[in-house]
Length: 102
Image (cartoon, rainbow, N blue to C red; front, side, top):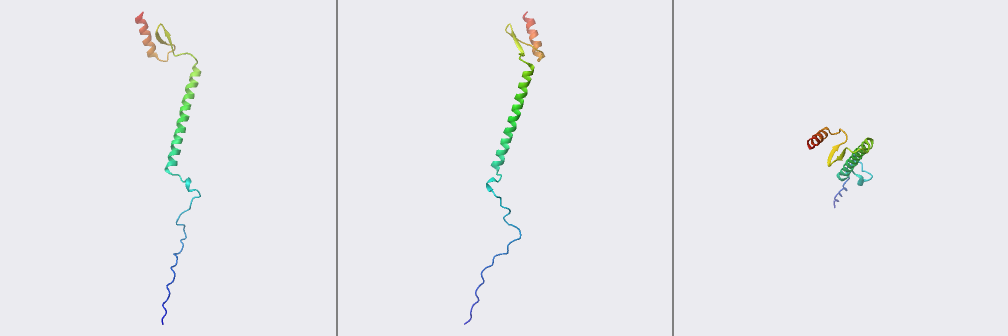
Protein backbone atom coordinates (compact mmCIF):
# COMPACT_ATOMS: atom_id res chain seq x y z
CA UNK A 1 0.00 0.00 0.00
CA UNK A 2 1.20 3.41 -0.80
CA UNK A 3 1.54 5.94 1.91
CA UNK A 4 0.27 9.39 1.33
CA UNK A 5 2.57 12.16 2.37
CA UNK A 6 1.36 14.07 5.42
CA UNK A 7 0.90 17.80 4.89
CA UNK A 8 3.40 20.04 6.60
CA UNK A 9 2.09 22.41 9.29
CA UNK A 10 1.74 26.00 8.11
CA UNK A 11 4.74 28.13 8.84
CA UNK A 12 4.58 31.63 10.25
CA UNK A 13 5.70 34.47 8.01
CA UNK A 14 9.11 35.84 8.81
CA UNK A 15 9.20 38.64 11.39
CA UNK A 16 9.85 42.09 9.94
CA UNK A 17 12.96 43.95 10.97
CA UNK A 18 10.89 47.03 11.90
CA UNK A 19 8.18 47.22 14.55
CA UNK A 20 4.80 47.27 12.72
CA UNK A 21 2.85 48.55 15.77
CA UNK A 22 5.13 51.46 16.53
CA UNK A 23 6.43 52.41 19.93
CA UNK A 24 3.78 51.83 22.53
CA UNK A 25 3.38 54.64 25.01
CA UNK A 26 3.69 53.80 28.69
CA UNK A 27 0.47 55.64 29.63
CA UNK A 28 -2.07 55.69 26.80
CA UNK A 29 -4.53 57.64 28.98
CA UNK A 30 -2.17 60.65 28.82
CA UNK A 31 -2.53 60.88 25.05
CA UNK A 32 -3.38 64.51 24.16
CA UNK A 33 -6.95 64.24 22.93
CA UNK A 34 -8.97 67.16 21.64
CA UNK A 35 -10.61 67.54 25.07
CA UNK A 36 -7.27 67.97 26.79
CA UNK A 37 -6.01 70.37 24.12
CA UNK A 38 -9.13 72.54 24.30
CA UNK A 39 -9.09 72.50 28.10
CA UNK A 40 -5.49 73.69 28.14
CA UNK A 41 -6.22 76.33 25.49
CA UNK A 42 -9.26 77.76 27.28
CA UNK A 43 -7.56 77.55 30.67
CA UNK A 44 -4.58 79.48 29.32
CA UNK A 45 -6.81 82.10 27.74
CA UNK A 46 -8.74 82.50 31.00
CA UNK A 47 -5.48 82.90 32.92
CA UNK A 48 -4.17 85.52 30.49
CA UNK A 49 -7.47 87.44 30.62
CA UNK A 50 -7.34 87.43 34.42
CA UNK A 51 -3.78 88.76 34.44
CA UNK A 52 -4.70 91.52 31.98
CA UNK A 53 -7.77 92.48 34.02
CA UNK A 54 -5.80 92.61 37.27
CA UNK A 55 -3.10 94.71 35.59
CA UNK A 56 -5.67 97.22 34.35
CA UNK A 57 -7.30 97.45 37.78
CA UNK A 58 -3.89 97.90 39.44
CA UNK A 59 -2.91 100.69 37.04
CA UNK A 60 -6.22 102.49 37.53
CA UNK A 61 -5.95 102.23 41.32
CA UNK A 62 -2.34 103.46 41.26
CA UNK A 63 -3.34 106.43 39.14
CA UNK A 64 -6.25 107.25 41.44
CA UNK A 65 -3.96 107.15 44.47
CA UNK A 66 -1.41 109.31 42.69
CA UNK A 67 -3.96 111.98 41.79
CA UNK A 68 -5.33 112.04 45.31
CA UNK A 69 -8.75 112.42 46.80
CA UNK A 70 -9.79 115.43 44.75
CA UNK A 71 -13.10 114.90 43.02
CA UNK A 72 -13.25 115.79 39.32
CA UNK A 73 -16.40 117.88 39.93
CA UNK A 74 -18.21 119.85 42.62
CA UNK A 75 -21.82 120.72 43.18
CA UNK A 76 -22.48 124.45 43.32
CA UNK A 77 -26.03 125.72 43.59
CA UNK A 78 -27.55 122.63 42.01
CA UNK A 79 -25.18 122.56 39.03
CA UNK A 80 -22.15 120.39 38.45
CA UNK A 81 -18.86 122.20 37.82
CA UNK A 82 -15.57 120.48 37.07
CA UNK A 83 -12.76 121.22 39.53
CA UNK A 84 -9.89 120.73 37.08
CA UNK A 85 -9.51 121.21 33.37
CA UNK A 86 -9.75 117.55 32.38
CA UNK A 87 -12.72 118.12 30.10
CA UNK A 88 -12.53 121.56 28.48
CA UNK A 89 -15.85 121.24 26.63
CA UNK A 90 -17.81 120.60 29.79
CA UNK A 91 -16.11 123.50 31.61
CA UNK A 92 -16.88 125.83 28.69
CA UNK A 93 -20.49 124.63 28.66
CA UNK A 94 -20.74 125.13 32.43
CA UNK A 95 -19.36 128.66 32.06
CA UNK A 96 -21.92 129.47 29.35
CA UNK A 97 -24.85 128.10 31.34
CA UNK A 98 -23.78 129.96 34.48
CA UNK A 99 -23.36 133.24 32.55
CA UNK A 100 -26.79 132.91 30.90
CA UNK A 101 -28.48 132.27 34.28
CA UNK A 102 -26.98 135.37 35.85
